Amino acid sequence: MSSSEILPSNIILNPEDRIFPEFSLTKLLHSVFDPTEGCRVCILTDFEEPSKEMKGFQFLQSPEKFPVQVKAYEEFFCKLQDGAMHELGMSGGEMFAYHATNGSNLDMEDECFDVDGLALSLDQNIYPEYDIILCISDWSATAPLTAKCKDFGFRGATMHGLNDIILNSGLSVDYNQVSSDAEKLRLAMTGADEIEIDFTLDNDRTLTAKLFLDGQEAQKSHGLCKGKTPEIANLPAGEVYFVPVDAVGQFPMKYHDGTLGLLDVEDRNIYRSTLIEGDQMIIDEHNERLKDDPVTGTLGELGFGTQVLPVSGADIQDEKVLGTCHLATGRDDHLGGDIIPEMFKTHQNSTHDDILFAPHKTPNFNISQVRMKRGEQFEILIENFKPSQYLINALSQK
Image (cartoon, rainbow, N blue to C red):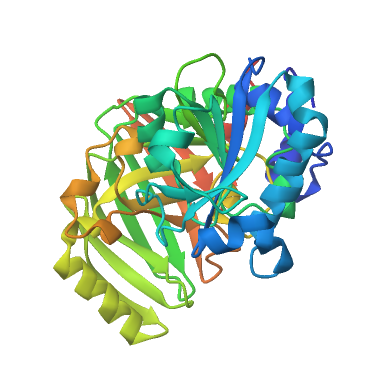
């Protein structure tokens, strides 16, 4: 699809029917990072034992244990070496491994390792030496790398949880088009005063969360890092987001084991979780964490997907699907927010954790409606996990 084409509404409403071009690393890097001529590029990935797994690419002997890292090697490292770097006028292409953070967007340890097993420093040997850094990892590193890129002047992209579906859909699109579509939807929502989200449970009970945005300018994650300005793209991109100034109400959350809880929110903070179904112990653990370190329950983001993409099974892509939305708790300094790592009781708590609402992720409840108030304007944004006609019309603008 060229950057001037507009997807028909039947494809927008049924993204599983969309046909994508074949993945091309050259096309992806050119569209995201132009200009690439003269740039040094490297790849970062994460392991619990980086010195062991990175030395001699030992991790390739256990592809079932390290699927993301193997994809990084096969689809990025090898293709850079096999001609993509030459075609783009780039140099470098090395791959390094750092210690897994075991938390979303936690700051990274400085130590990393090269393929010879040599210990290096991210601050001394990596960040100052490369112009473009591609981080393909298990745990998201968008927040720490956003801070580091401003200190050291590099550009980069984070692609945690990479899999075949993401590679052949969310990373195969034209990012000039992605940016254009994200801007159209950003303009449709920017300046919003309030967003209300209705959640309907299996028993037809409806919960409502209200987020106050104070007319702030909406931001977009559009995937472009063109020019020389230090910036990190979170790929796949395609999102419009806000940093809430306040929030009240209730919303459901599906925990990692499938337990469903009802979260109560006041003054922008989740202050209590109540069991709907599943394991009471999971609810108790969450309530204890909220009591022990309340900022872990502060809502730091409200986001809306802007891309027409299939479900990948990984939140990094699935939160970018048009018709879904997500909230996030924890640090939001990388989004321009006011929640910084120093506000948490412990470093390990200073995560940014997305709570995605999507039909495959949360089949036991529905987003029946999302409404926006902008001055005297009232618009429906989403109904039953589908974009409203208001958003479809916005995408159709030339």
